[in-house]
Image 1 (cartoon, rainbow, N blue to C red):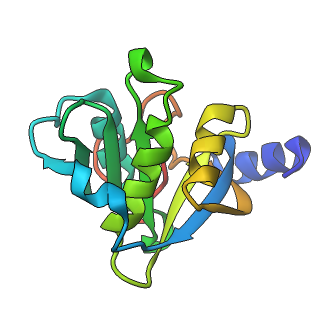
Image 2: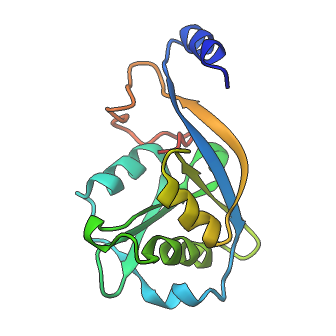
Length: 165
């Protein structure tokens, strides 16, 4: 993960390295208490976080609590792994909502299947939420976008090889 190696690899791939993320994983929790509070949403296709997830993942589903517009986005990402991202409304942060959303995502995973989250190490609130929800750090990763795409401009078509977002 050294910067010089990542820069060298990026030049060989014709792509710049993305951000360094901590990869966390947890096993499905079908009996999770949070599952009853999440509702599937089909009205959020224009939401930036949803559009970004669909650019990097397949089989994307969007959920939110019954009483709020916070998001839980689940889809198939890198190597077909089940991945989750969450978004808490800025006005509602600091109340344990991120932890509840991360726990709820575990209840959406098929029984016995792990679910993964990628979090920037500097995003302390997100790291704490996923850790408190039972996710454990397993590695770090840096992804390289396909040629012709930048980190600020996701690919127009969903990536079949599941680049994470």
